[in-house]
Length: 304
Ligand code: NAP
Image (cartoon, rainbow, N blue to C red; front, side, top):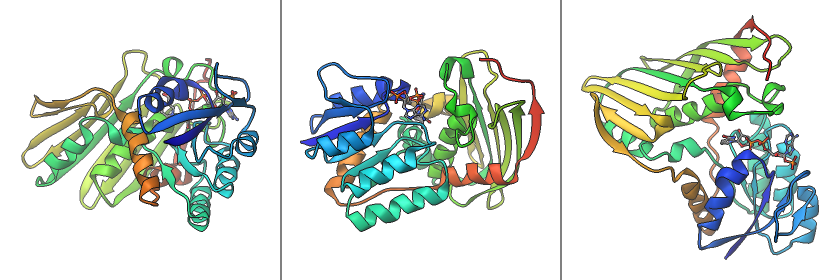
């Protein structure tokens, strides 16, 4: 039985992590650490350091805090010799995640940088279908209402919080699971006055000769649209609902329930048993490139 500690009891921890851990018979939530939240019936600590000091039987930690500030928490976990699972994005910068990888290796523990959208039901079937097709172009549309999905979250508007790349990186995580060697050509970042991160972004990318566009927008006040269109020599593959549904030439082929987090925790456990780690920085690298080279366009102030 794997004893897990969870750090950062916020929206995603409650919605996905707690149910996924509870449904996995080989693991047990043993404690949480959160500054302002407690869980009835479980030891609850104000921060990760207190949890690690008091709970030597907890051998794995799942970090569900925002990316800014997560590095010190993650380092504390690894230096205490515990396995570590990171919510996406795995860090606020590439260099800090690389430092975490080196520390995990030095300590002989597992580090798992999770990308939940890669576990959506139709992503693997899409990869299989695409494997013998010639790609012509790819178009990503990732539109949602920030007020619906991130109410009251100030950290997403602060430097390191990614802004609209917080959902957009999910699309990029799917893209980089399906297609290799993706390169950013141009980024246009639409940043509300007084904020550090974009509310919308338009990217031009390529993989070899295949042109790729990505449009991310948080000002979409309808039901979310999370779609990737792959044009190939043998028709059009549509990946919809964040990777949950796939159709080819308008014929539905695959759809499935959301088991993203169940699959992530199963993978984390498998990695620990195999004494392995998994950190793929490709999605975060593309976002970093967009912030490095992006053209800034000031837009209207955002009022929550
Ligand atoms: P959230 O609701 O703000 O929860 C994060 C929790 O972390 C907070 O409740 C807070 O709990 C704790 N925390 C520790 N340090 C913090 C700080 N400096 N600022 C703010 N909170 C801090 O955020 P979330 O939506 O769960 O997202 C957390 C991570 O999961 C992000 O990396 C996000 O990209 C990822 N994620 C989110 C979703 C989603 O739909 N929301 C989906 C997938 C992945 P205490 O105040 O009790 O410490």
